[in-house]
View 1 (cartoon, one colour):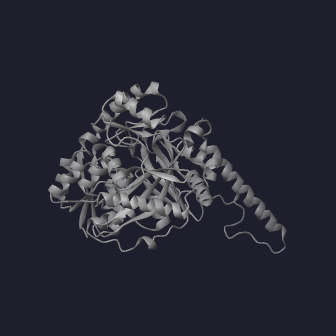
View 2 (tube, rainbow, N blue to C red):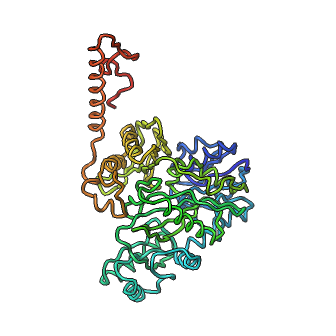
View 3 (tube, one colour):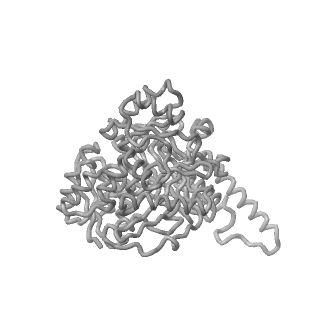
Length: 501
C-alpha cells in the first residue's frame, strides 16, 4: 500500500478521496487554487499546496505543476478524481514517466475509450451491441447528410473526442443536418480541441442506464450492477439511483456481462463505467467512462463496496478478493446533485458566500459535500456543491427519505437545485419509476416553474408534526393511567431543536 498520495482535484471528490485514503492509513496531499484556500478538502488533507490562480487552466489543469508537487512532497501516486485531467492519456503517461503511479487505468485504455468512434469500432469487434451509426468520424456535412439518410431520422451528432453533452446535437429532419454538423463541430473543438463528430441513431425515449465495473491487474473483472441516470438536463445528469426500477435479474446479468466484455477488450484496470441506452428490453453500448463517476455513492450504498478505496487498492497492486457471485444488492439508493443553480431561471449559475449551512442527518443519509460556511462560490468551476445520497429498504422509502433530507438541508448565500429535487420526489411518474431521458422535457412546467418556497414547506411540515404530537398528548391525558413523555409533554411546550431559521 502507498504511504502518501496526491489528490489532483478539488471540491467534494477531493474530500471523498482524502477520506478513503485516511481510512486505508494513507496520507493525502491536497492541491488548491487561490480561490480554494479555505475549501474543506484543503483543511482535511495532511498537506496542501497552492498551485495557481483560480482559472483551472492555470491551476488544476497544470499537469507539470501537479507532478512537480507530487515529487516534492514525496507522494507515490496521484488520484485524479473526475473531470479535469482524469481522462487525459498524456497526463497519465507523464505521471508514469515521472516514476509515479496513476490511480486509474492505463493511457492506452483511456485512449481506446476516449475516442468515441474508435471505441464503437472496438466494441463492435468484441460483439458488444452498439446504437446503429458510424464507426468513424464524419468527413464533412455532405457525408453527414448521406449517413443520416441511411440510418434514418432522428439522428444524434456526437463529439468523437469527449462527452458530457458537449458537441452533441439531436437532428430531427434533413433540413437541420448541415447547421447541426457545424455547431456540434465548433462546440467539440472548443471543449476538446477536436471538432470530429459522428452519427448515431437517436432513440426516442430510452432510459440511460450505466454499469459499474472494477478490474485489477490479476485478471479479475466484475460488475457491481446498474445505476439509473435518466433524469438529465442537456445530457447532464441531475438525479441517479441504484438499482434501476425496471431491470430484471436476467437483464442485469446480461448488461453486466456486456460491460465486463467491454472492459476486457481494452485491458481495463481500476474503477470504470459503461454507459448504455435501454429500451423495451434491448440495450446498447454508448461509451465507457474511464474514471470514478459522480454518482458512485449509490452503488456503494447498495453493494457495500467502497469504490474509491478499491481504486487505491488496485493501483497499489492488490487483487479483488471477492467474486461476481459474492456481490449482492440490498435496498435502494438515490443521489441528488446539489448545484449552485436556480432551477426556476433555466438553471442559471448562482454565486455568493455560503452563509448558514445546515446538513441533513439520520438513518440512511449521506452527504458528500465540498462546501462549508464562509466558502465563496464563484464561476471558475463546475456549479456542483455537493451530493446528497440516501439509502432505504425500498425505492419508495428511499424517495421519502430523500424528501425528508432535502427539507432538512439549508444552504444560504446562493440559489441551489434543492427546490427542483423536492418537486421530483413528489412527482407521480418519478415515484412510479416511469422514467426516460425525456423526463425533464415532459415535466418541465411542473418541475421548473416558480421556485418552491422551502420556508413554507418546512413551516407546514413542522405544523403538521406539532399538531399530531398535540393530539397524541391529548389522547394520552384522557386515559386514566396516561403520563407525559420523558421530554416533558407536548412539543408545543418543549420546542428544543425546532427553528424557523
